[in-house]
Structures are given as C-alpha cells and as structure tokens.
Length: 304
Image (cartoon, rainbow, N blue to C red):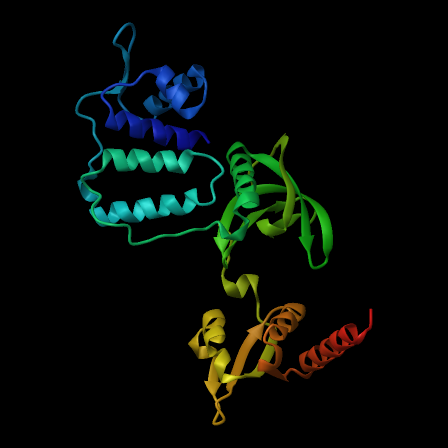
C-alpha cells in the first residue's frame, strides 16, 4: 500500500546520505514514476527532501533533519520488532521483513540482548491465510469491494463486502465490513472464507466507526449453563474460561457456571469432554446431549 511505501522510503532516506530513484523503484518493485509521486507526497507532508540531477545526484533529506530516536529505548525497539515480526508471520509479501531489516540496520545501537517476545499470528492455516489477508489489505487501502464464498452454520452464501478492518481476536482472523447482502456491518471469519477476490469496483467509504468487539457484544450470553466436570479437566476450564468459572465440590468434581451464546456450539463443546462432563442445567441442553449420544451409539452399532 502507498502509506507503507512512503514510510519505507522515509526510513531509507533517514539512514542513507543519498539514494537514486531507480534504486528505490527496484527496492519497492514499482516504477520510477511512482517513486516520483511518492517523493512529491513526502514533500507536501513537510519532509524537506531535495533532489539532484546528473552524475552523483539522487534523492536526500536536507541536512539537519533527523528523527530524534533518543526517545526510543532498547526495550522500545524490541517491542516494535516483536510487533512487526508477528505481522510478518501472516504476511504474503516481503514488506514487514524489509521494514524489520531497515529498523535493525538503522538502530543497531538501540537493540541489545535477545528477543524476549515472540508472536506468531499465522495459526495452522498460514498458506491459505496470507493471500486472503494481502487481498483484503489491498482492497481496504484502495477502497475496492471484496467478494467471497462464506461457510456458516446456516449454510453457504456468496458475499460482497465493503472491507473496513482486518481483526485478530479470539485466536482467529476476521474481516469487519458492510455486507451488501445483509445491508449491515458483519464480522466474517477468514478461515470460513473461500475464493476471496477483489472486485474492480470502488465504494464510497461510510462513516464506519471502530467495531465493538467486546465479548458481550459479539457473544451475548443467553444460555445459563451449569455442568459438573471431573477434577482432571480443571486445566481446560481454566484455559478456556478462567479460574472463576467453577467451584470445587466436596467430592472433587468441578461445578461449572457460565453464560453461553449458541446452543449447538455449547453441545459440541460439552461433547468434547466425553464422560468427563455432565450438564445439569438447562434441561433442554441436557436432553439434546443425551439425544446426540444416543444417535452416535446407533451409528457405531451398525454393521458394515
């Protein structure tokens, strides 16, 4: 995207005395004309850039203009690099890797010791995830519609969306945008999206505020659940709901209480515990779990 390239050009100019337009064009894999427009944009933003024609000429920043990096400590630089490294883990391009190289090359005196924070956002689906993220990022930057096939519990649908935000939350990546089919803002999980492509059609940006992604907004509790779990499942309850989601009974079993949003997801979750869990309330959930177990028993009792 253009803003990424402008930051990259400025970073290079701050580290080198002079650089030529062909060098920048080759580095960022764009035309010399594009670099010329980028330099004009930096000048309009107040960066004192000068250009010299002829042999030995090039592009440079006027003497005396330097970013004051004394406000950044070694720890600050490590945190910045950790953030860039996490984005690079899901990037389909070389941008974040190049930006890390620039920062490390120009700030070696600030970077000491080993990395203490390692973040990988790619999950198991990196190969399919990176192209989706790159396509959506480009569409957001250029204000182009995106189209994709979406797989949801209610079925499969074709969606066309005005993309506004890429979101990483609840251990997954999402797209927040205006769905032309539903005429409203929607949150789409990238792992459920297929055949993601940018449409050659722009849209007028709405007054889209930051999405409210609080758990209470996206997952409003409506099902009051009580269940008993065997003591050896404590680690999983703590991992998924925290230490305050249960109390310990005298017999060692764990009395779990929580608000759940979706009936089907609740039943699926309970079933993953096998005989280590028993639903107490509500009765409807208890009955559906029993019916599911009975249906499974019949499936496995059939002779092939």
